[in-house]
Length: 466
Image (tube, rainbow, N blue to C red):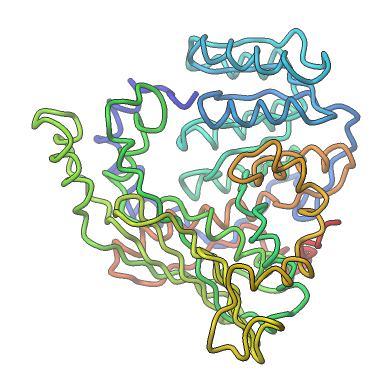
């Protein structure tokens, strides 16, 4: 369902975006700590009852959803029971992919397609244990909320939601239904991210002071007419009307876990944000398309690059950047700095006080390339070592997708807490609406809501999983 209710979105995006994404509307939702609803249970360290077999359904089997489905079908303990998308051919393709693997586990898969509310029928009829949601951003929250209300754990593509109000509703629903709602931040399962997490936990770079995170990825080609289905039909509209960091979690998720944010040690406090002028998208539209093309009828107002600074309760800082427009190489930055050294990525490099043994003499030069082999041997994350062979075989962004999906299944079967809880998904995603407010107010600091209602102080740090 990458291709969602286009008629509804296209007819209302321009007229209503000024209201739904306006800084005033967003700020009105940011009310700090809210009271929990009756019969709620804090989900920070929540472990659901064990499942022998996970009956899984998926909403949206375009490029991303189909890739998830093919990998899930290979993982022991899963049974694909329902697939939903607007397009019948995409559903049939996904059913065929499931039938080819799994030693006969994935039989009699219910198929839903052709209507905007078919996913609701699937939830009611199939009653899955878990639902994968891989649709457009605007649908993430409502689909996750309804899935939990129907008794399923919800696993949502990034971002978990678009507005702060949606995030509060997701949290309230998760706490009331006692169902997981995990944002599927796959980058937390990359080899370098897991390596850095392990090194941070072992205090290799001392006390943590500062991090840098980004999503820098030239996606202007989504505005081309080559793609008849997919993100190009809806994602550019967000860039046209919203001015802030619209996609923060790929870079922010890993560094937030390095710093133990929202987990006993430290917490998000405030954010300041600035955007550059909005030039690149308008130029691209003029260069690539005729004057009367739809993209030339829209004034892209979102700045080409957004830079934000997050301050934590302990006074540590995180620079978060976003740029889907400029002609520059892909990067997530992925830098973490401590009192004894710095770990950085793109390319992977390490500087340590006293030097990296066998590579550098001091912290004035980076250890890179083959010089890092001894560090990989010593500090590669044990979970990565355990799953490396399978991950390389299955692929998915270098294997991180498979490790994420495997861990989701493993946690549900063992009845242990997920690696990413619902509050983390909301904190990381909330950078978008908060940055929009800050940009609109000339960089004025904005406080993060306390989605945990103070319970983060009692939430266990993410362990180094064996």
